[in-house]
Image (cartoon, rainbow, N blue to C red; front, side):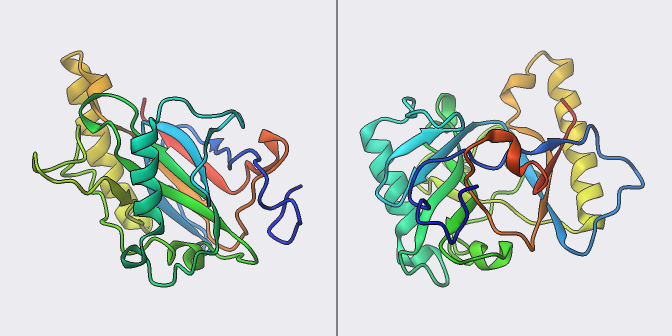
Length: 218
């Protein structure tokens, strides 16, 4: 396994692959070391510290043009977007929107940092990015036509908040589904994230499925 203490840390590997959890049950309970974030319907992209981009299959990602790649890299590494971004992020794991009205926008899922083993510590590398709100941003990231803030982070929900946002998102999705516009809705559900484990890129896709569980209403 490629771990945060491995000399291979700068090399490409597979990002975390969520385990399927079905729909979120009414009696769902979070463990003390878990949080929930929304699941965005975009492209899974890894960006290296140098700005190279790969898909979740460890192949070069081709849906991000050179100008967009430069912009994404600048946003991720800008000092005003984090509490302690000292250039120590080795890989950025993002959900990237490659087409439509949201083309070029992205949300940070997580990052690989040498020696870090805590989700909240890693979050501090991008915690000053604006937080996207699924209640308000249902089909597009940009609330205003001239808004050029392309980079975002996900909100974090506790148990009670997760149930409420799940009900809202599921209701919205079904409304879009009834009108045959479900593909316009940019949300898929929620992801349960384990917070006390390191984030590692691995040589096999199935090696880190225990760090996240995906709940989908699609």
